Amino acid sequence: MTLDVVTNRAISAAELGIPEQFNAASYYVDRNVQEGRGGKVAIEAGDERITYQQVLERVNQTGSLLRDALGVRREERVLLLLLDTPEFAYSFFGAMKIGAVPIPTNTLLKPADYQYILNDSRAGVAIVSEALLPQLQAIPREQLRFLREVVVVGNAPAGTRSLSELMQVQPTTLEAAETSRDDAAFWLYSSGSTGFPKGCVHLHHDMVICSELYAKGILRISAQDRTFSVAKLFFAYGLGNGLYFPFAVGATTILWAGPPTPPNIYAVVERHRPTLFFSVPTSYAMLLAHQREGGPDFDLSSVRQGVSAGEALPAALFQRFKERFGVEILDGIGSTEILHIFISNRAGAVRPGSSGQIVPGYEAKLVDEENRPVPQGEIGNLLIKGDSTCAYYWNKHEKTKDTIEGHWIRTGDKYYQDADGYFWYAGRSDDMLKVGGIWVSPVEIENTLIEHPAVQEAGVVGRADQDGLIKPMAFVVLRPGHQGSPELARELQKFVRGRIAEYKRPRWVEFVAELPKTATGKTQRFKLRELATLETR
Ligand code: 3UK
Image 1 (cartoon, protein in one colour):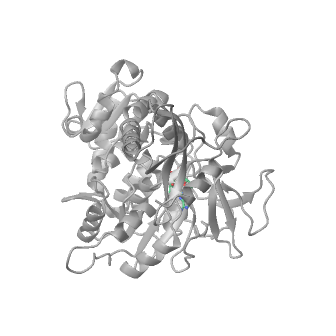
Image 2: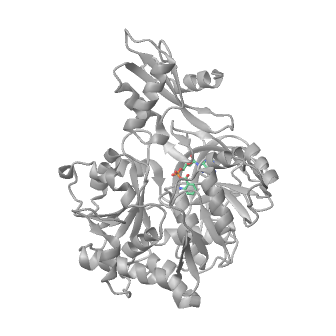
Image 3: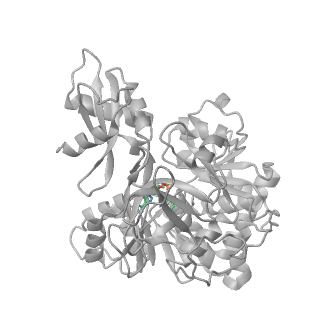
């Protein structure tokens, strides 16, 4: 299964040679052992070194326990609420190997979010890191209509099961379920501007498309590589970077479960010496802002290539990172729906500030509101054709039809293309914000602010910080009898932090007498965006 023809059209799973009967877990795990890499280190996590043979055995044990001890059937969903530890790999591939459908889930959300995802997906089993268990336990048990078993990585309190104890008694061999390349393999939830997140149903062949076209085609990943992704495995971005890209070629992945602060990231890089380093613009900006106290600068000499995605990487950050560390960052755009990066810069041919060129094997088109192609140089809506796109949104038929049109998917992004085929990001066609590479809905922040007794109305937009990266800013109209003050602004920030995920908090709160409105009473966000730019605090 290799792509030896450079192609300027979209390539399908069948054309890539993925057989009809295909189980992605066997491909990513068993194949490494079959091809003689059983003794090679697959995962480094702290002091742990786990070989491909050991990964295979533990994947088999996890698959067996799900199927035989917990009664998970084919096609049943298994929620993963896991930090970046080796158990993520065992659970993800173990579930997939028995034909069940793992759902890696954002670990930064609140109990109400998990309640929605558990009920929407009807997952019967959740595998949860001990540290994240309180987020599930805060949900009233009677609200969870489908969840039968909670399996804990770490200490398992009463009413839950221990993953390691369940694993111990399971055989280390397991035959893969006879899945087809077009069976559902895993889901990833993606947030929208209104309403609840959408479950993107990904098929067994999807990861292979991304491994071949982007990881091998653009990054030239090989068994000698060592990957480290600052973006965690529960993101579509991190899942490729830190799990199925290295496993596609028998490389080594470096997993780090802690918070991605600059000192932590530098320590992991210096200790484990990755060759491929994946992060998001906000994190690159934080790394650049951090200096070592005394002594030489941090050592990133092991890194042959940096990668950035999630939001546009400002040219200044690219330049500063290259000057300071000698590392070239490849910016590329991907999405949860398309699974990984489909437009990317290439080593040695970077245009700083652009998203790069189409990844061979995908096709792109830019169209106007009437679906007509726009002339080169003009801004259009970006549509992508490629075979890693999810089959549909679970239980969201209308949203699926609004987004996926046959072979093509609407990304919701505006772009223009220069004469050499480089794509330049020109904003979203909806109001969604990317904050630190993660989706944030302004509507969700507004709805939360309005729950505060002093707030009458709120309008939230993105505002660029000193690095040119977008963060949420709230314009707030107070109820009669309330006065705007720095204390109230701080109180509102705290209020939002207590109710929705931390990263969604407004970084600035501005009190205004009224919000700009259309004749039909809709908040004019473009006017608020102008106001936000004018603000110089
Ligand atoms: C935006 C970018 C400009 C864009 C992702 C790499 O971010 C990922 O997936 P999400 O579903 O968001 C997708 C949306 O994010 N975006 C992502 N990368 C860039 N905008 N420049 C970029 N380089 O709006 C896109 O539609 O969270 C990234 C790999 C896999 C992914 N899922």
